[in-house]
Picture 1 (cartoon, rainbow, N blue to C red):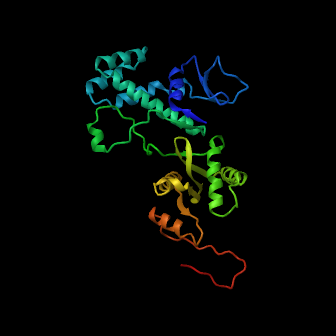
Picture 2: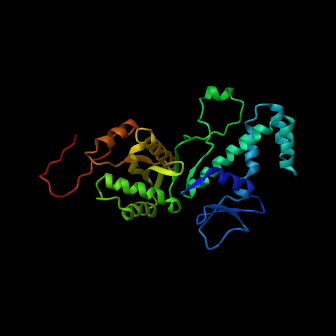
Picture 3: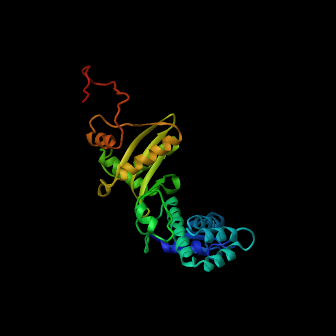
Length: 298
């Protein structure tokens, strides 16, 4: 089941201090307080305070280029009647259409974030335009909400709430690595849940709410990268690099040095890691077992 992103945005737009909305999984509908059935599987949408229309107005004002309009708008949102005064000031400076475009973009991002946080796939009948180059963006007079992550692929931190989609990926990973004969969902779930129980970070690359790649990272004094996987149809599109980059950013926040643990014969993984700046071997781990007293190192 996929959620229509416009339906999410409409529910966010109707949310107020007096009315909240839920997604009813059983009926595939968004329902208000008076409609919700407590016996159904309900997922709460952001409330009035989480949506934060006031914050969206502040962000809009910051990107207004006209100094006089920006000053008037800043004064308009101070004190009582902020929303009414803000709309009146937008009309005064002919910014009303720009404001509604900006607000729609903001609600679209909030709707996407909500879907990703709850592990819901979605479809967008009116997707955002691709990001433009900086030089082109300077000439564009329309307000643009900038995101640091590529539009089509988002990197999401996985928890037990949004785990389900990534379990399917983990099952494919175990099968491809020949760790299981079939796509064993139970083992895949165990792999991810055990990682979460250890306190590891699990990241998933998501397209329209559908996980297409994942990585686990044990971040402590050091950061150990393991279980990196991207679906076959999505390889060679930079998704693995995006996952590594995000894991490295989290490690940097913890001042941890990043390591990647791979098998000695995995040349593809080694080449991929070399390409992403992993080039120094810190140690070689030997396993005691049946051996002739020698080891091979390329």
